[in-house]
Length: 165
Image (cartoon, rainbow, N blue to C red; front, top):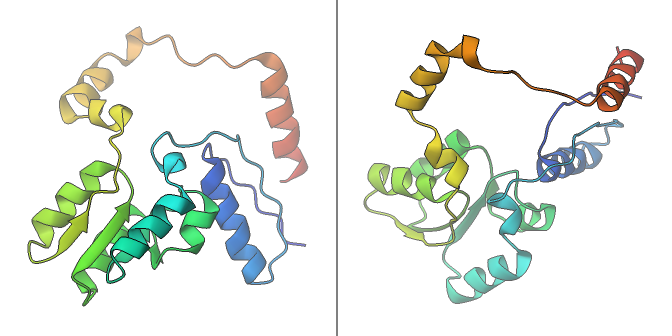
């Protein structure tokens, strides 16, 4: 048995990784924190099917943090960089993007001859990240209190980690 330890806080990403390994016949164990993305978790199979019905010519592309059933019914599943490359290299002219809204802005700028259907959602957390805030944080690291983890959780994480090394 191959054991893979992945520390990830995105439950849907882990489900899609598990499905990928299962399809390849790879036995694995994945340990995940179990959180979901507030943007990608909201896309549904019903929404995808509705887009396909209204726009059969559209290529459906989604981020791997979307629900497994959304990914399974997409024409392409990939990271932001992967989606940018897929659209650029595709002969298709219409795309439905199941990811954060900011990606659509980049795609439109890089591919003005192509059409992008408005499926995206805005991630408020991502919009707070900018170079000024990163610089301010780096300049004030000493003033940050750090991260507190409950002792029970820390002990369980340590046990799991040691068991899989």
